[in-house]
Length: 108
Image (cartoon, rainbow, N blue to C red; front, side, top):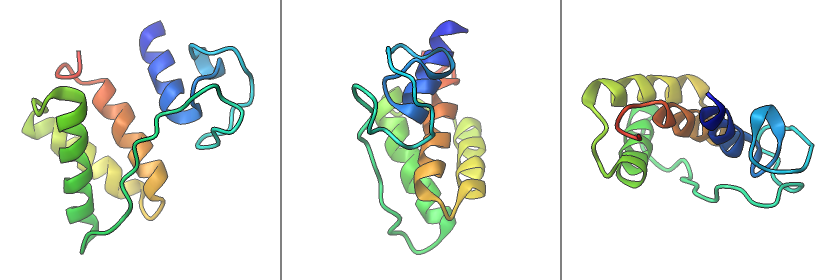
């Protein structure tokens, strides 16, 4: 549980001590990384024709980067649905997708 809390914190707040994070600073505002020692810099601007196309592109890219492309079809669908629900905030949607991939067996 501690590892997952730390990874979620890293995605949401950068390297901090927020919600069980691995860092040493306090300043828990999701998506605000200026007070952190570091943060995940991956971004994927919204540039697809539809929300579904954007979700597919993001989840496919994250699958390649975080699971070597091993993410199952059912897990991809769950993550795509969650991503679409977070739109139009593409940054929040990306953080949600990253967190969900961290919980999959394919990540571990």
